[in-house]
Length: 159
Image (cartoon, rainbow, N blue to C red; front, side):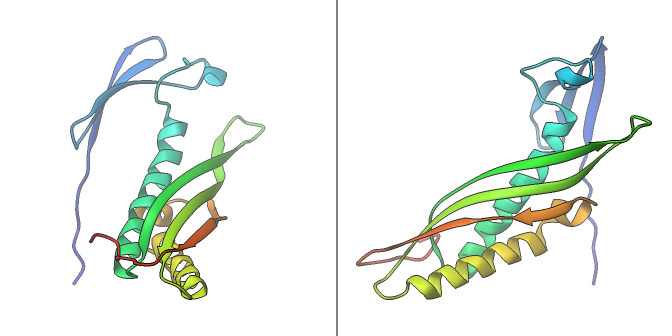
């Protein structure tokens, strides 16, 4: 049976091209348009928030999948780039999100290929189950660098 969940944010204009956002989970911060759109540097922008939402959601889904695939995750770092198309009439749309995760996992002796395959499946599951990735029109490209390190004794994720 399907169910729903609701999330909320509140924004307030604070003058010029500045605003304050309060997130439903607690944090509050200033935001602005990006400098190339008459905004300010050094603060959250809607464009940054969009790319960050996809990047953080995919990472959390990967951690979830890594636990289920019993991977010994050592590290996950991901740089994601959003490509924005600006039309002649100045309408804009993100056309692509390009993820470059660097993933390090440990494995026991002789398990390198099996663990790398499980890591790739976990990454596919992360994309499949990412709420944000599933909610955008942009093309999603994930180009991972996976490093599997053999160790003498390996304990699964979360142990």
